[in-house]
Image 1: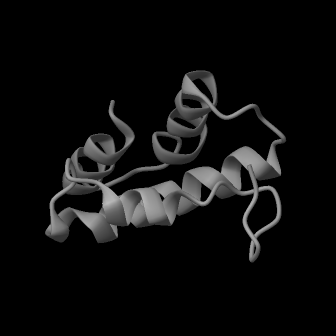
Image 2: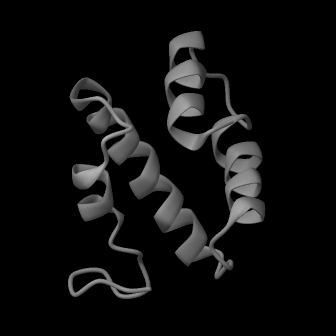
Length: 80
């Protein structure tokens, strides 16, 4: 669960590049959210999974005012 460059973080970028489910124009948004999520999980020493994602969504995304497009775009990437 670690990368050479980022100890403790999952190397999700290669999975994202190889994904056939994510359109090319969506990849930057997914990468932004996944990086943010990975840092949150590592910082809070959480076990990666659905519960960590739900906590991240509540504490990092919904805790501040966001534009509608951000919630929609990030929600798509987070699967919420």
